[in-house]
Image 1 (cartoon, rainbow, N blue to C red):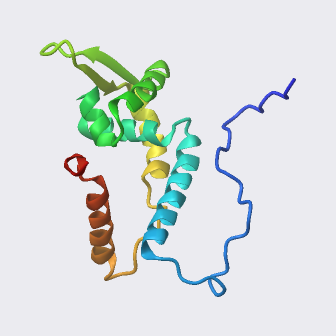
Image 2: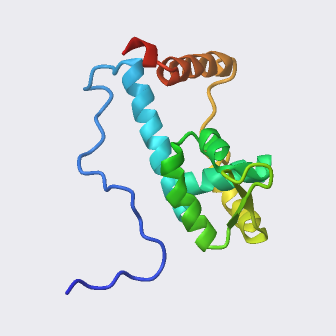
Length: 167
């Protein structure tokens, strides 16, 4: 029988199995490779930080959007969090069970479920916000932030655009 987990949050970040490569010995990576690595590192750090508040990255994003936008239809919430509606449902279920959000039918359209923050949800969001969105990520050097932002937005637009017409 396995030993029970100790109380408290569980660290889900993977252990580093190999040492980081020495930049002097490794050839420079492509910019695309660096973007992927940076994105993975940011996501892992966000998981670690939001996990300390009992939230996942998506759960924090839900609270963050609702705190800034107010009550939203679940489909619109999914679009703003950038996940599929079916992927959002279990996250909203867990947040609702924890008393952080409520769901109710829309009087104008009974097919629509509106999701809103509770007082407890707003308090959890306030506590988690510095870790979920905070200033812990290094900014680009002065004078380069517009160029870096422009490049990253171009990459996102290229990869997130609807390509269904190409199939």
